[in-house]
Length: 491
Ligand SMILES: Cc1cc2nc3c(=O)[nH]c(=O)nc-3n(C[C@H](O)[C@H](O)[C@H](O)COP(=O)(O)OP(=O)(O)OC[C@H]3O[C@@H](n4cnc5c(N)ncnc54)[C@H](O)[C@@H]3O)c2cc1C
Image 1 (cartoon, helix red, strand yellow):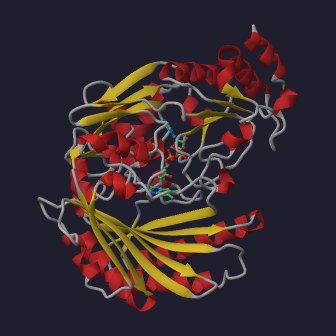
Image 2: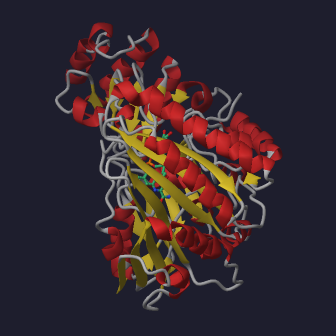
Image 3: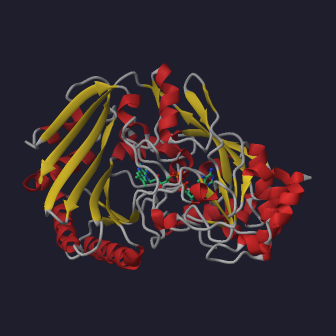
């Protein structure tokens, strides 16, 4: 009864404090959700509505949902999906809230389903079941007493679901493949509200499609991930000065080309930062390797460069991850990303062009430009091929480097200027790479900007198969028509 009274309080007028007025469909969904789960539904007048509305990494993602539904378990998720579907209401899903553009994980005037409360996990001998409300640090913490590790996010506060559904770049992809390659089972709520599992023997097509298919098939309420014995990791933090950037890039290229059939798991976070005010350039490596070799042997080419900071340590995955925080509301930020074959001279040219171009933005308040180098060694591709079903990317068996511009700034008035700058520069450099026959087309959704069509870079036959699977599991098009956000398979 109380729920019913509260439902009556959620009227179109109350919902319309957003920048987009609520439609009858959304009013229908918010009212019905409120009738069934009133404590878990927030309206704009609820005490913690604002806190939830801005629980995102990119400040640009702070939109105004008409109501926010916070289910606590898979059954409630299923009821919620049934309701938005029955009312024909647009909705968005938020996991860890780190996808970086407006509308990728939030919605103006629609229903936002948040997964924060789905935090249950269960540790087995060589797998862990995790809820989609978990951050990677939660998974690392859960496994620490067992001396085991997962292939997930490299930083502490990235969400489990978003990263796992788009691929997932971890330090150890060279040996174990991407996060998606390490999922042995997905528990999924489909568009009609039914709950299914997808693994190598049940719903095998869906199992494959979820490996890179993002939020196009259903809402995943549990991931079962492989784990690996990893009592210790050997880590290195190194920085380099501007004159050492070429050697830094050369070392990155060399690491991307390592292709041992029995590899040592090792990889890093490689960035070049430009402080536009002081004009200082500095490159940095945060490297992690399985085992106790100290300094970590796989980073020898970096260690050989003089560099001002060299900090090596043998530690645990938990200790390493604990301070790698990327808090919510960190920036307004734009990403742009493309792939190239490993080529140090060309990457250095790209860096130089980026550096010169960034300097033209010195009047942008709070500008924070980073050139990111992600390595995709052959081993990462091979490990994915060697799983039960492979993945939706089907990358060629060769090393590639995924170069990315990550650019932060302070003011909304600069949004269009900054996103256009990032897009134009990366597109023109990628076009030059094509002319030089150095470009590769694959775009990783985790590094991409909102203007990029990552699915257009997947193999055509895989897209065809994914669309067939989507039509079979979601004939009403709940996850294509009504679910907003992120990267969608085109109709
Ligand atoms: C600072 C930073 C560091 C990063 N580091 C890495 C890294 O090391 N490796 C890497 O691979 N990527 C990295 N990324 C990219 C990251 O993987 C993506 O942004 C990813 O989407 C984040 O997952 P999330 O759960 O936090 O995202 P969210 O923003 O919550 O969700 C992302 C998308 O997935 C959908 N979604 C979320 N949960 C579900 C679900 N349960 N079912 C269906 N759809 C769902 C959402 O609707 C949204 O469209 C990084 C990003 C940032 C901002």
